[in-house]
Image (tube, rainbow, N blue to C red; front, side, top):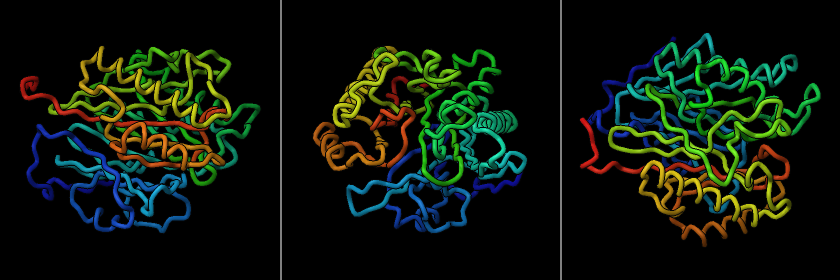
Length: 354
């Protein structure tokens, strides 16, 4: 593996610091951002962006829907010592500290292998990379897949993705117990992109009482159920992170409010609120409402206007949560809006363990 060590370049490193922080910033500042010595990765959104020769930069082929004059870059920073590297055998670029591994890989489809088989190979490579680098537990995954509603070998490509992911994950011991938060979104162009966060000790799976767990969906939705949890909670030394999967207007396992984007948005927010309440009650998170979330990412299907959705969120959340709006194909064709979220909470001094 090729490795670049950053250990000597970061000052004020503390083992008690959270392993990373995430923020939305102005894409126009990306050169200055990348000149900082503590950047794990920078994720930008859109088609046909100018190439940047830096492995820490990830480009997601989803257009950003503008609600302001600024384009966004998602920046992951760390105060801990870290290194970047490349797993040449598996095609995975990564950044890692003592406690986390952030990695990604991009695959050009070859018109020979099915998405089912490609997904199996991708997740096998991720698992092998985790094992080789000693970060055995996934915390969060993001999957961006071209043309997910097209059919391939008689199967919708999203369902083929679910099948391939399940086939490899079910080979792991107690795999349902360790399923993690995930997003799977369709793009119209580009390569398959998967990026992931892994660590040395497991997070805790959190489900939504309003929804059937995705891995318990009836086979109607796919030959194998989607292998993810509604959220993952992870306690670090000084912070708790809550990673919320892509969430939509689904009650039980059924899509609600077909053809009504604002009503779907309202139902999605109800699902997020129920998930937060469950985490509050079962894991003693202090978060009480949606306004306290740290970041939101809103996916909107092509043809749906962003303006009314942005305005509804502004009024509901009182403009308190940094938000990015992206255009993408959500897993079910009748779903018009999907939201993923991130929340971080400092652990009280009285609760710290040393």
